[in-house]
Image (cartoon, rainbow over all chains, first blue to last red; front, side, top):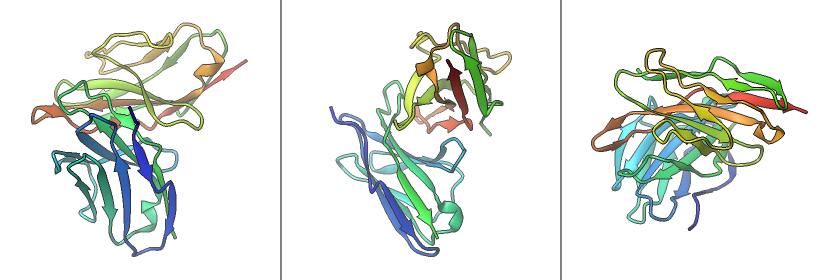
Length: 113
Length: 112
């Protein structure tokens, strides 16, 4: 059983650019959730994908968007990057009709200059 | 709006002493409560959940709906308990669980 993987591990972008982060869910999981963790803060829920559709969203603007693919892997896209988008982005997979235990990936560290 | 509050950013106790990490929440329905832990250089992982009522690594947490609290306790701290601890809650909608709302976390340091 493979765990949740994320790529890249870190990257640097400049303000105004666009970025795509990737996540492979744990085997057997059909739901992917994305979180933003700023320095010194707890993770903040961005959105959740189930059956390739957005299924719940936190307080993030539309320039944060995502995709889920038939194999349940997922992408997080952020347009028009701002300095405050610098954070650790965490992906978590789970089984929607299961016990809601979310398994986290190691995260992608995004720095916006 | 749902919210999780962890009042202590840092908690330092001596090995063998009791530990209590505080967590209070606000939610209009019946949430599910969790404690997640992140050890140094490791990913975030589930420690325990209120539904299972288990004791994991000697830790327990009881959901008190009257006080809207879910404090994490351990009677005798061990050095390997040093980590970041996050309290989280999840509601349910559309037949499944929603995303997690996390507190800001408490950094627990166990001194030898």
